[in-house]
Length: 484
Picture 1 (cartoon, rainbow, N blue to C red):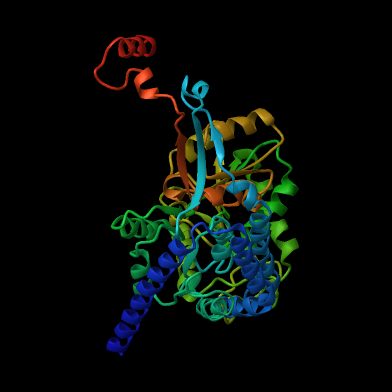
Picture 2 (picture 1 turned 90 degrees about the horizontal axis):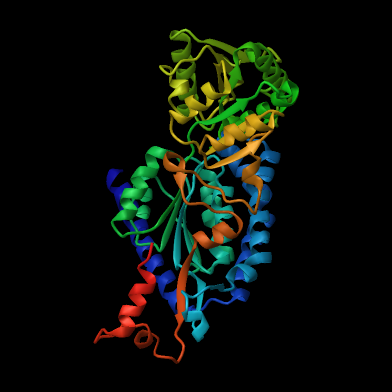
């Protein structure tokens, strides 16, 4: 068995090398890639998703044990189609060269300078299990619009979805344009070591470090979308009913298995009870029952379910109060599958795992503060998050939170929504990631910004004294430029 598995990995690695060579050769032969060809590829990607949306929804649900059909359509398929359409609509404008101002006085002599955006070549895409379609095809919008080819390594944890993608992509794309490679961690390691022209990875920070090391051997530029613990500031002026509805929706979408999910709340001491009550009521209104509720998604597998349960046990052991939000009084202990209700954890400390690890599930710690500056200081003492959320009507407080913290992105008076904006960059900072995509920012991430300078007919170097023998012209230039 071990020999058979090893042979399978070797064959897939050999195929990866062959496809990479074919894509690079095809890219070079086709330069420059026309907008018509790019648009056609985008149309084929859209057709793949739209024509097989229901198939993908079924496959994802099988992988999760249960995942809401509507949630897959709304959070995986729809954002992908939207991103692809947006890229097709705007790629002609994005592709135009940008005129830049030549250094004085060269422009007066007729010099010209511009930035030309060229495709990089072959882009590797390593995608996660939590949004196994969207995290391939949302960045794919920028990849294809920029004129690149793509090789995809989907997650082994969503085996049915990955297999479906591997079956459908060849029906819509030649292998020299786009290809999918399935398999476990060994295949992923081999994939990340390939000499791509760019590599984008979405997943855990710990894995992102390994991806970056592997890419470094070939000096492959990387975009890392990693996650972390996204804080939610609840200001004293916040509408608590609105907080409850919106935090609950963002936390329980995909059962909290979102890199941007509100990881923990920062609440004024004297408002803790009111906020906890509002979130519990918000969760109950969205999901009055859970076990037989098709709208509510399962935790993806036993490993992650056990991880979340261990966080709760650790918090209880260290003195926290754990509040289970179970409006239907259902018996989860004897239920099949891995559905898990929202658990609100109060009285948390930094010694607890819920405040040390990215939660990635329906567990919501609540940390209190005396002043908003205390909350800001707490966030700044930890890794810079992928997302940050502020609820409140106090504009000066909002400005203080936004100017004194750093995060990948921000949503005010809601959660997650900055990620839904096509014209805003999406990405992290520091341990939550590097680089970004969406809209024009994705196009530029997957493009090479090439500097082009056109010299006028005059002997500029001689006139400026740059050419030896150095003399009066040189002295004049130096005297003019070397001033405070």
